[in-house]
Length: 401
View 1 (cartoon, rainbow, N blue to C red):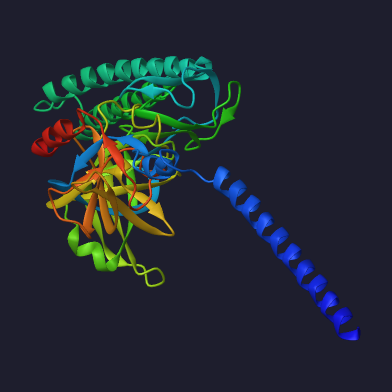
View 2: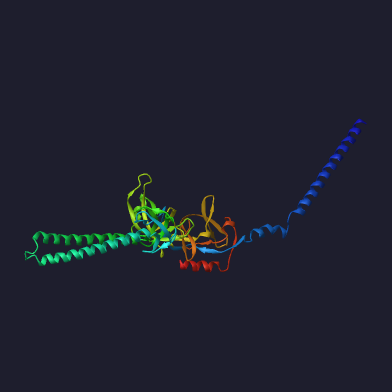
């Protein structure tokens, strides 16, 4: 009886185990069905593959070409006047009556800048004219008496002493005429100096003259940049001074970006012991005196470049270069239309055929087809679509270079 009871219990345990196993199998089957329903099969299973095979971007291309790029030596320095002229009063104690120019005006040689009051000078001039007339009258009388004395010199009508007195009086009268004439010239010069004129053409850079002011002789009233010419005093390292020669062309770049042409006039014979830099004086070339002063003004600090000739180089459009993590890269287009990121070393920059180009020193060979636009959106291995006219335009551009 006891054994029968034990067998029944065992049967019940096995039956319960089978039920549990069946329930677990059913759960796994349902879960597998759900997963299978959610997973892509058939055509849906190939969707990711088709998505990755689509081009990520339509791009234009350029060919790594060869061209001639100018060699430039950069420098910086101050802008100064070629020569500054100090214009002052030569007359003593005269009052300024009128002023005709101001700072920034372009003047010509001999142009009247200011006028002084003439009342005192005119009075002195008339007095000098009267003194000359009086001296000439006395000279004529003395000459007449001397002529008579010389006529009676052989006779004994008058003594030799009297003859000598008349001759001396004639000489003194003529001397007084000369003195009076000199005094008249001084007054005429004073009258001329009542008009302050420009000694040469140029641009007025400073003015201290004021209407109504009484100025002393020699006081500066105007300052002028002679001829309107400017000089760029470029500071060039001593190691590069040997590359520069007199007559070499240069480009001076104003702070606002405007460019002016220049020519090396002189190289300083000494080098600064503190900076180890030498001064190179570059004359800024301008067709008119005031044109150079539009963007460049004395006292400005400007940069510039000296033209050292040109040399061949591998070039690509500047927009084809992308900078990542401090390095420069190009995207080479492979035959399968996928791109490869190529690390390159860049150099000089120049404008070729109206397009900004950059030199490729190392990293890629001439004739390689690279992406020219949209490089900032691409990654290594991306599939791209080349624009229809891209290769033709790039090839023609390469021929022009």
